[in-house]
Image 1 (cartoon, rainbow, N blue to C red):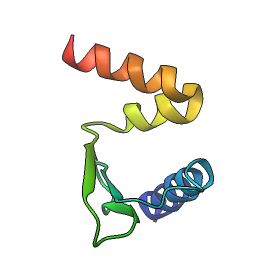
Image 2: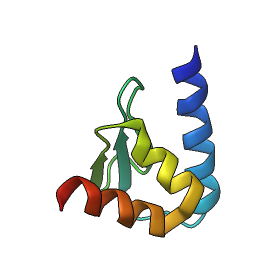
Image 3: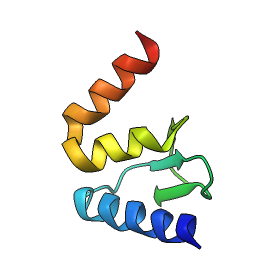
Image 4: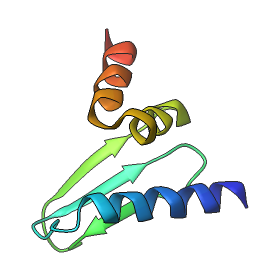
Length: 76
């Protein structure tokens, strides 16, 4: 139940931020949630896979800076 709510919260947040997302599609893979696909499924697709829920937390909390910090901590 909690992951379904998290899935919906993330999808709503992304839809708000990407109102003009028309070309292509975005697929987010999140642990414990079903994949979230936004945009036209028949267009080229961009995939982002999160290995922990912490990455989502950083983005929701700190936006682009949080995404960058999370990426650096994982890959650096």
